[in-house]
Each structure stands twice: as structure tokens, then as C-alpha cells.
Length: 104
Image 1 (cartoon, one colour):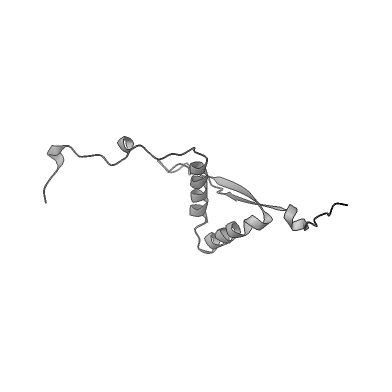
Image 2 (cartoon, rainbow, N blue to C red; image 1 turned 45 degrees about the vertical axis):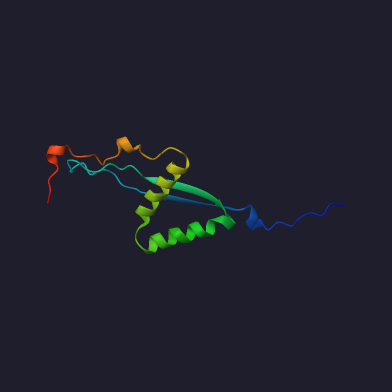
């Protein structure tokens, strides 16, 4: 007779964390910044959720939850290959023409 491994019910649980920024653009402002990142959702096994939940709690306590959400969205985009490093020739650092270079 095969021995059956006993499983704890918590091993069958998942934990989902959803962070949503609920806001809209103020129609009275002429040129507001765009609302690019408005939410993220993650699902973990119960055992793997602990470190992430601790990070979320620290962000809430530190009043930096929006920044945490934006960083999580950026990390996911990089990991998924949706965002890649910018090529050197396209970077914002551009050499000034020789006539604009001044000695100090």
C-alpha cells in the first residue's frame, strides 16, 4: 500500500495582493502629469507571500505605497522583457557641440 503524504490545508492556499491607485486627472489643471501606473496584482503561495507582505506593510507604514507600486510595476515590465536598457546612442546624455563647451 502506498504511503499518502499528509498535506496541510495552508499548502493549498494562495495569497493575492492588489494595489490600486484610485484617482483621476483634475480637469481644472492645464497640463497634469499622466496616470501611467494605476495598479498591480500579485498572487503567491501562502509560504512565498510572507516576504512580499512584509514589504507591503513597510511601504504602508512608511507612507510610500504609491512608489512601491510603481517600482513593482517597473520590475515586472523589466522581468517580462517589456522594458529593455536604452541603447547608448539613444540615451539622454548628449555631447554638446564644441562651440557650446566653455572652460571654467
